[in-house]
Image 1 (cartoon, rainbow, N blue to C red):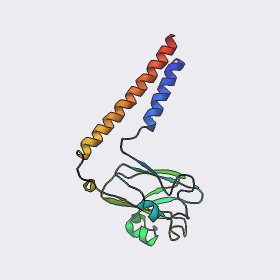
Image 2 (image 1 turned 45 degrees about the vertical axis):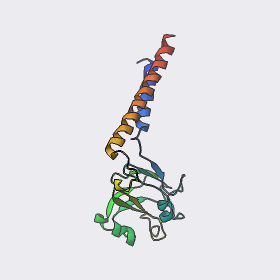
Image 3 (image 1 turned 90 degrees about the vertical axis):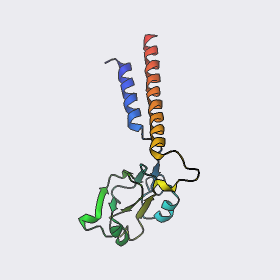
Image 4 (image 1 turned 30 degrees about the horizontal axis):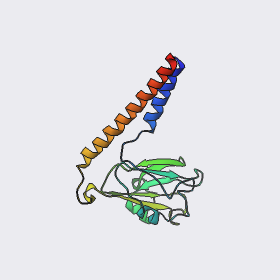
Length: 174
């Protein structure tokens, strides 16, 4: 395969990997940087300053050897005890964890399971409200608005890839 086609394939692949549905927001838990998920942050205050929606992504950044992220039940969150397998919904320990919040009308509960970290305040409750909290006047139906944004974003992505292909082919011919 010629180098220009390889470049085009690489660009298209990168764009598709970076693309996410329109409207989804990323939230760097505790703030940007490696110390976002740590023992020195007030996560109740941080969470209250955010607006979460279904489809949003929480990004937990931390020193892998010092912390982890457990998604747990409310009982495990409140007691800081996730020793019962039924209380642990998911575990993350990469140091850069991306957690999607897929459902509205739900609270998600997260703790650090390293001894004494949760008790020391390293826990996060994220409330994702339902669609019924829309301001007046009401917007178009959420599914229609999301479909419109997604289609618009998809068209933009396709146009960008086509423009890059055109540039590469024109440069190759010239």
